[in-house]
Image 1: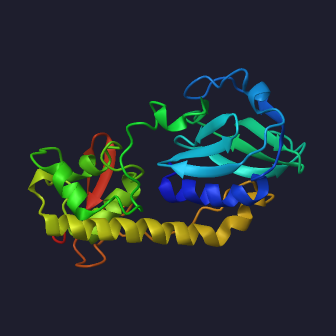
Image 2: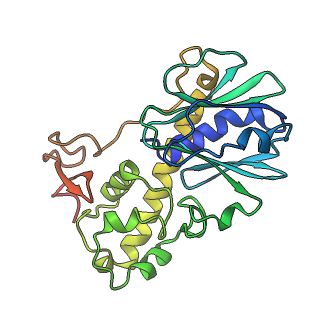
Length: 271
């Protein structure tokens, strides 16, 4: 599933090709992904200039004078830049073409993504209005998490993945951050000290920024003939390594399920 670094990489990859360009055509091949795509989207975007692009959590936001378009990549989606008249494949659901003869194409095999028109007040939309602070912003501090977690019996993994607490920390990077902060993912959020939260926030920011930086090295692939976006390849310390030795103590990493998500951790290093 695309997580925050992949979405940020997508944003940086497509922006130079479409920012300040005029929309000339919108092609909708499948009217419903996770939610119905507005049927009047071609009319809403026709001849509109894309003023800017941004990201909020895992949502891509395309800003026009008339409103904001939200794109979510879902479980398996990707965005890439194509040239006009590039043949569409089975899972290519939406194209937005621009006056410079380029287009962005949303590919989503599992159809859990979204394309929604938010109008002129995008941050009042229900998908965005209750989101917590961005993990790479100054608003996310150890003190903030410590205060939010008081008297919380929920485990720290689920606490961090609550988008109302902090937004955009997905399963992979949450698992990694807890490992580097030496915090066991089953530990109650309310039983973690301020000092440990400060350490955790430091690792969250380092891990996410490193992933984004690595993704940026392959942005050229967003206009590649293979159609694959330039996501990074990052060596992970815990996620996906169940049964393998811990890179710090060599004891076997174990795997559990938390809220139907896979968690891998080290019993020795994480307490």
